[in-house]
Image (cartoon, rainbow, N blue to C red; front, side, top):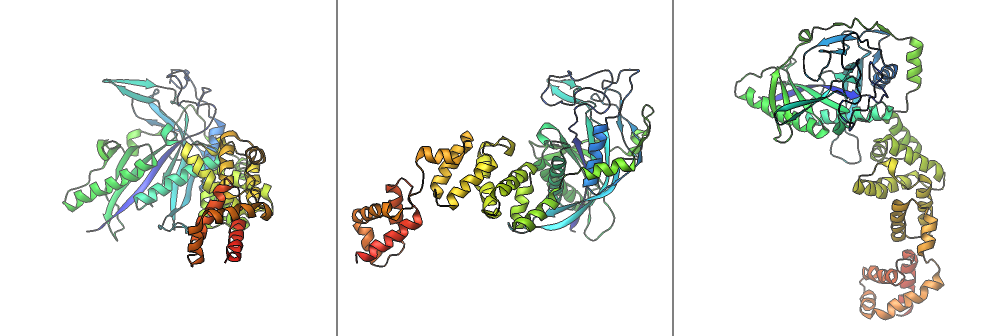
Length: 487
């Protein structure tokens, strides 16, 4: 019997605030000495009182609006009670019945394998976007568990989807899209390797065509997008084997073992009542003014879909090129700045080709972010102009680009210093062409005998003789003229 996966996701996102959720400690936890960013409030000392971080509320509302959610004017914080060593208070301040944002959606594209077309659009409903505090971090060493409370109290936004995802590929598209949005908004780095974004999957199987959900299994410890995809694929296989063998699927929490590539049972699954939620007595209800919500909405940047559609409409780019350029907001800004400098003199498609081609190649080879690239958009446009105007040819342009990449110097200086200007003077090039013809009698004879492709070899010899500076189109023209006149 064929089965269909039914998947919902809980994504936790650490917010880029300067201080923690309920105290003034620094929220910078990654890479800092253990237990140095702590105070009585985030350590849960008796008699301490929390104070809500306004910026964290703003960031969560921004995210909810970007995910098409309704922002709740009235919401409350709650105590989520459970006992674990990395939870200093013995409870977590979170939200339950009245979250900040709810009832939204995120549209994803699941690729169809064609590199120039969009995949099938799918809408994943967002149940809620709420705010809570992060826990500390446990490190297990030689039978001991060490606790670092630097992360305890860092603002943590939780995005909970409905069970609308139907495959590992859709889940992968969903979480990568979420990361793109939080990065566009500037609310989080979204770096999974640094723990700034963590995913949990709720997955069940049901017979194809059935409307009833199967037994749900939660999968934790997913610390990369690759892990999300692989863990879901494995869990689908595991549950399928059980069902086909006539065995029940048990409602449990599984952990993902990256090294072994398998899920492993951790504990029985908790229900909401196990946490004994109740309103946080030390915090008043949070009431948001409609005017404040509208002001936050007005401050949102242009989001990826809108930017992609504008790039296609204004710059004549394909859907594929536009998607590649808007994937990273900083890349999109770099490209658009270059296009503005180019004005009407250079086709935006040509600028896009240099950005996604030579620039991306160097960035990928050196693991360099666009914000660390030394080449200014203005200098990239100057280089493109020199190629388009015939000042330098493509080999010289690549050599110049390499020096620009290393030094950040403008192309005009490099071309002048290295003598890379293209030889486009027919009189200057005619003698070189004549010498190439004299030095290569056999290829010349082959060409005259009708072997048209040998002209490429002769052009190469002209380029070699001029150290790559000859205009190849002019070289071919002069070769053909002299070869015909010698017949």
